[in-house]
Image (cartoon, rainbow, N blue to C red; front, side, top):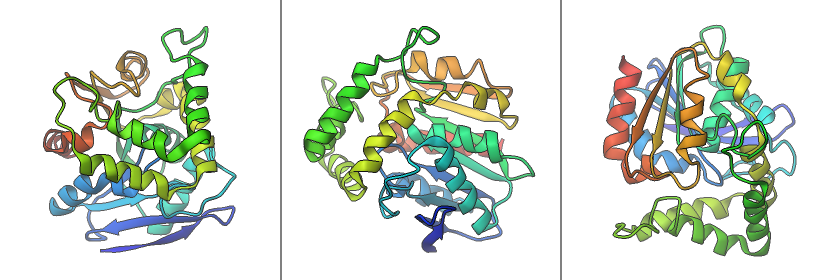
Length: 279
Protein backbone atom coordinates (compact mmCIF):
# COMPACT_ATOMS: atom_id res chain seq x y z
CA UNK A 1 0.00 0.00 0.00
CA UNK A 2 1.25 3.47 -0.81
CA UNK A 3 0.30 7.11 -1.02
CA UNK A 4 1.97 10.11 -2.55
CA UNK A 5 1.62 13.25 -4.62
CA UNK A 6 1.56 13.95 -8.34
CA UNK A 7 2.20 17.37 -9.83
CA UNK A 8 -0.55 18.77 -12.07
CA UNK A 9 0.16 20.82 -15.19
CA UNK A 10 0.08 24.11 -13.27
CA UNK A 11 2.29 22.81 -10.46
CA UNK A 12 -0.52 21.93 -8.04
CA UNK A 13 0.27 18.98 -5.80
CA UNK A 14 -2.45 16.30 -5.89
CA UNK A 15 -2.52 13.71 -3.09
CA UNK A 16 -3.48 10.11 -3.85
CA UNK A 17 -3.71 6.65 -2.31
CA UNK A 18 -2.77 3.59 -4.35
CA UNK A 19 -3.40 0.20 -2.74
CA UNK A 20 -3.22 -3.34 -4.01
CA UNK A 21 -1.31 -5.21 -6.68
CA UNK A 22 -0.12 -3.03 -9.55
CA UNK A 23 -1.04 -5.86 -11.94
CA UNK A 24 -4.68 -5.93 -10.82
CA UNK A 25 -7.50 -4.06 -12.54
CA UNK A 26 -7.61 -0.52 -11.13
CA UNK A 27 -10.66 1.13 -9.62
CA UNK A 28 -10.35 4.90 -9.27
CA UNK A 29 -12.63 6.65 -6.77
CA UNK A 30 -13.63 10.33 -7.12
CA UNK A 31 -15.04 11.98 -3.99
CA UNK A 32 -17.78 14.55 -3.54
CA UNK A 33 -17.70 18.13 -2.30
CA UNK A 34 -16.10 19.17 0.06
CA UNK A 35 -14.56 15.84 1.05
CA UNK A 36 -11.43 13.80 0.31
CA UNK A 37 -10.22 10.35 -0.67
CA UNK A 38 -11.04 9.26 2.89
CA UNK A 39 -14.73 9.31 2.03
CA UNK A 40 -14.12 6.04 0.14
CA UNK A 41 -12.69 4.11 3.11
CA UNK A 42 -15.43 1.46 3.05
CA UNK A 43 -14.99 0.91 -0.69
CA UNK A 44 -11.18 0.98 -0.70
CA UNK A 45 -10.95 -1.74 1.93
CA UNK A 46 -13.68 -3.87 0.34
CA UNK A 47 -12.34 -3.80 -3.21
CA UNK A 48 -8.69 -4.18 -2.25
CA UNK A 49 -9.74 -7.34 -0.39
CA UNK A 50 -11.46 -8.50 -3.60
CA UNK A 51 -8.14 -8.33 -5.43
CA UNK A 52 -8.46 -4.98 -7.17
CA UNK A 53 -5.98 -2.12 -7.28
CA UNK A 54 -7.78 0.78 -5.60
CA UNK A 55 -6.88 4.43 -6.06
CA UNK A 56 -8.42 7.58 -4.62
CA UNK A 57 -7.19 11.15 -4.81
CA UNK A 58 -7.95 14.41 -3.06
CA UNK A 59 -9.27 16.86 -5.65
CA UNK A 60 -7.22 20.05 -5.88
CA UNK A 61 -8.06 22.34 -2.97
CA UNK A 62 -9.53 19.42 -1.01
CA UNK A 63 -8.06 17.19 1.67
CA UNK A 64 -4.27 16.92 1.53
CA UNK A 65 -3.89 18.37 -1.96
CA UNK A 66 -2.57 21.90 -2.41
CA UNK A 67 -5.07 24.60 -1.48
CA UNK A 68 -4.90 26.35 -4.82
CA UNK A 69 -7.12 29.33 -5.59
CA UNK A 70 -7.15 28.51 -9.31
CA UNK A 71 -8.37 25.65 -11.48
CA UNK A 72 -11.35 24.82 -9.32
CA UNK A 73 -13.57 23.85 -12.26
CA UNK A 74 -14.40 20.65 -14.11
CA UNK A 75 -12.01 20.90 -17.04
CA UNK A 76 -9.04 21.26 -14.72
CA UNK A 77 -10.35 18.57 -12.36
CA UNK A 78 -10.52 16.16 -15.31
CA UNK A 79 -7.05 17.16 -16.50
CA UNK A 80 -5.71 16.50 -12.99
CA UNK A 81 -7.21 13.00 -13.11
CA UNK A 82 -5.55 12.38 -16.46
CA UNK A 83 -2.22 13.47 -14.99
CA UNK A 84 -2.72 11.02 -12.13
CA UNK A 85 -3.79 8.23 -14.47
CA UNK A 86 -0.76 8.76 -16.69
CA UNK A 87 1.57 8.94 -13.68
CA UNK A 88 0.28 5.60 -12.38
CA UNK A 89 0.14 3.99 -15.82
CA UNK A 90 -3.52 3.03 -15.50
CA UNK A 91 -5.31 1.03 -18.17
CA UNK A 92 -8.71 -0.69 -18.30
CA UNK A 93 -9.71 1.23 -15.18
CA UNK A 94 -13.14 1.54 -13.60
CA UNK A 95 -13.86 5.11 -12.51
CA UNK A 96 -16.36 5.56 -9.68
CA UNK A 97 -17.57 9.06 -8.78
CA UNK A 98 -19.91 10.32 -6.07
CA UNK A 99 -21.80 13.60 -6.36
CA UNK A 100 -19.31 16.21 -7.65
CA UNK A 101 -16.95 13.31 -8.28
CA UNK A 102 -19.55 11.88 -10.62
CA UNK A 103 -19.33 15.02 -12.71
CA UNK A 104 -15.56 14.72 -12.67
CA UNK A 105 -15.82 11.13 -13.90
CA UNK A 106 -18.20 12.11 -16.71
CA UNK A 107 -15.91 14.89 -17.92
CA UNK A 108 -12.76 12.75 -17.57
CA UNK A 109 -14.15 9.69 -19.36
CA UNK A 110 -15.61 11.81 -22.16
CA UNK A 111 -12.41 13.77 -22.75
CA UNK A 112 -9.63 11.34 -21.82
CA UNK A 113 -11.17 7.87 -21.79
CA UNK A 114 -9.85 6.58 -25.10
CA UNK A 115 -6.94 4.22 -25.82
CA UNK A 116 -8.18 1.57 -23.37
CA UNK A 117 -7.75 3.87 -20.38
CA UNK A 118 -11.30 3.30 -19.11
CA UNK A 119 -13.28 0.05 -18.98
CA UNK A 120 -16.40 1.20 -17.12
CA UNK A 121 -17.75 4.10 -15.10
CA UNK A 122 -20.06 4.41 -12.12
CA UNK A 123 -21.90 7.58 -11.05
CA UNK A 124 -23.29 7.48 -7.50
CA UNK A 125 -25.69 10.25 -6.45
CA UNK A 126 -23.98 12.24 -9.17
CA UNK A 127 -24.63 15.79 -10.34
CA UNK A 128 -24.92 15.18 -14.16
CA UNK A 129 -26.52 16.22 -16.40
CA UNK A 130 -26.77 19.65 -14.65
CA UNK A 131 -28.12 20.77 -11.31
CA UNK A 132 -28.95 24.42 -12.00
CA UNK A 133 -32.49 25.38 -12.96
CA UNK A 134 -32.87 27.11 -16.33
CA UNK A 135 -35.33 27.34 -19.19
CA UNK A 136 -33.64 24.27 -20.66
CA UNK A 137 -33.61 22.51 -17.28
CA UNK A 138 -36.83 23.53 -15.52
CA UNK A 139 -36.61 20.77 -12.91
CA UNK A 140 -33.24 21.95 -11.57
CA UNK A 141 -32.50 23.81 -8.37
CA UNK A 142 -32.68 27.64 -8.43
CA UNK A 143 -29.47 29.67 -8.34
CA UNK A 144 -30.61 31.01 -4.97
CA UNK A 145 -30.01 27.58 -3.43
CA UNK A 146 -26.35 27.62 -4.41
CA UNK A 147 -25.99 31.29 -3.50
CA UNK A 148 -27.20 30.20 -0.07
CA UNK A 149 -24.47 27.54 0.06
CA UNK A 150 -21.86 30.18 -0.75
CA UNK A 151 -23.19 32.64 1.79
CA UNK A 152 -23.31 30.00 4.53
CA UNK A 153 -19.79 28.84 3.78
CA UNK A 154 -18.40 32.37 3.73
CA UNK A 155 -20.15 33.28 6.99
CA UNK A 156 -19.25 30.18 9.04
CA UNK A 157 -17.82 27.26 7.11
CA UNK A 158 -17.37 25.10 10.21
CA UNK A 159 -21.02 25.39 11.23
CA UNK A 160 -22.28 25.03 7.67
CA UNK A 161 -20.37 21.79 7.18
CA UNK A 162 -21.67 20.46 10.48
CA UNK A 163 -25.23 21.29 9.47
CA UNK A 164 -24.90 19.53 6.10
CA UNK A 165 -23.36 16.38 7.58
CA UNK A 166 -25.79 16.09 10.47
CA UNK A 167 -28.77 16.85 8.24
CA UNK A 168 -29.56 16.15 4.59
CA UNK A 169 -26.32 14.58 3.34
CA UNK A 170 -26.90 11.26 5.11
CA UNK A 171 -30.62 11.68 5.69
CA UNK A 172 -29.99 12.14 9.39
CA UNK A 173 -32.74 14.80 9.40
CA UNK A 174 -35.38 12.19 8.56
CA UNK A 175 -37.74 10.91 11.29
CA UNK A 176 -36.39 7.77 12.88
CA UNK A 177 -32.95 8.07 11.28
CA UNK A 178 -30.12 6.27 13.05
CA UNK A 179 -27.61 9.09 13.38
CA UNK A 180 -23.92 8.20 13.50
CA UNK A 181 -21.95 10.88 15.32
CA UNK A 182 -18.74 9.35 13.98
CA UNK A 183 -19.91 9.69 10.37
CA UNK A 184 -20.89 13.32 10.99
CA UNK A 185 -17.54 14.15 12.56
CA UNK A 186 -15.62 12.39 9.81
CA UNK A 187 -17.48 14.37 7.13
CA UNK A 188 -16.72 17.60 9.01
CA UNK A 189 -13.06 16.61 9.48
CA UNK A 190 -12.60 15.96 5.77
CA UNK A 191 -14.30 19.18 4.79
CA UNK A 192 -12.27 21.34 7.15
CA UNK A 193 -9.00 19.86 5.84
CA UNK A 194 -9.56 21.54 2.48
CA UNK A 195 -9.24 25.15 1.38
CA UNK A 196 -12.28 27.38 1.68
CA UNK A 197 -11.57 29.20 -1.63
CA UNK A 198 -11.51 25.89 -3.52
CA UNK A 199 -14.68 24.76 -1.78
CA UNK A 200 -16.39 28.07 -2.57
CA UNK A 201 -15.44 27.87 -6.25
CA UNK A 202 -16.42 24.21 -6.45
CA UNK A 203 -20.05 25.08 -5.66
CA UNK A 204 -20.25 26.77 -9.07
CA UNK A 205 -18.43 23.82 -10.67
CA UNK A 206 -20.83 21.18 -9.38
CA UNK A 207 -24.02 23.20 -9.81
CA UNK A 208 -23.56 25.03 -13.11
CA UNK A 209 -21.47 22.66 -15.25
CA UNK A 210 -23.52 21.06 -18.03
CA UNK A 211 -22.47 17.43 -18.55
CA UNK A 212 -25.05 16.66 -21.24
CA UNK A 213 -22.52 16.34 -24.05
CA UNK A 214 -20.13 14.39 -21.82
CA UNK A 215 -22.76 11.76 -21.10
CA UNK A 216 -23.62 11.51 -24.79
CA UNK A 217 -19.95 11.04 -25.70
CA UNK A 218 -19.21 8.19 -23.29
CA UNK A 219 -19.02 4.82 -25.04
CA UNK A 220 -18.11 2.50 -22.15
CA UNK A 221 -20.76 0.90 -19.87
CA UNK A 222 -21.97 3.26 -17.15
CA UNK A 223 -23.87 2.39 -13.99
CA UNK A 224 -25.98 5.13 -12.39
CA UNK A 225 -26.70 4.46 -8.70
CA UNK A 226 -28.98 6.91 -6.92
CA UNK A 227 -30.87 7.09 -3.66
CA UNK A 228 -34.53 7.89 -4.13
CA UNK A 229 -34.44 10.07 -1.00
CA UNK A 230 -31.35 12.03 -2.07
CA UNK A 231 -31.88 15.53 -0.67
CA UNK A 232 -28.64 16.98 -2.07
CA UNK A 233 -28.87 15.84 -5.71
CA UNK A 234 -32.55 15.04 -6.28
CA UNK A 235 -32.92 11.96 -8.46
CA UNK A 236 -35.61 13.38 -10.77
CA UNK A 237 -33.25 15.95 -12.27
CA UNK A 238 -30.08 13.87 -12.27
CA UNK A 239 -30.00 10.10 -12.72
CA UNK A 240 -33.47 9.88 -14.27
CA UNK A 241 -32.37 12.34 -16.96
CA UNK A 242 -28.79 11.13 -17.28
CA UNK A 243 -29.77 7.57 -18.10
CA UNK A 244 -31.50 8.84 -21.26
CA UNK A 245 -28.25 10.37 -22.54
CA UNK A 246 -25.93 7.39 -22.15
CA UNK A 247 -25.20 4.93 -24.95
CA UNK A 248 -24.64 2.02 -22.58
CA UNK A 249 -26.21 3.04 -19.29
CA UNK A 250 -27.80 1.07 -16.46
CA UNK A 251 -29.85 2.73 -13.74
CA UNK A 252 -30.19 1.30 -10.24
CA UNK A 253 -32.19 3.26 -7.67
CA UNK A 254 -32.54 2.70 -3.94
CA UNK A 255 -35.82 3.53 -2.16
CA UNK A 256 -35.27 5.65 0.94
CA UNK A 257 -31.50 5.88 0.53
CA UNK A 258 -29.76 9.26 1.08
CA UNK A 259 -27.08 11.12 -0.84
CA UNK A 260 -24.30 9.59 1.24
CA UNK A 261 -25.53 6.02 0.76
CA UNK A 262 -22.08 4.66 -0.11
CA UNK A 263 -21.24 5.29 3.55
CA UNK A 264 -24.54 4.59 5.30
CA UNK A 265 -25.36 1.55 3.16
CA UNK A 266 -21.94 0.29 2.08
CA UNK A 267 -23.11 -3.25 2.82
CA UNK A 268 -25.55 -2.92 -0.12
CA UNK A 269 -23.68 -0.55 -2.42
CA UNK A 270 -20.36 -2.43 -2.44
CA UNK A 271 -21.77 -5.79 -3.66
CA UNK A 272 -23.81 -4.00 -6.32
CA UNK A 273 -20.69 -2.18 -7.49
CA UNK A 274 -18.76 -5.44 -7.55
CA UNK A 275 -21.43 -7.17 -9.63
CA UNK A 276 -21.34 -4.38 -12.23
CA UNK A 277 -17.55 -4.38 -12.42
CA UNK A 278 -17.45 -8.17 -12.83
CA UNK A 279 -20.24 -8.31 -15.40
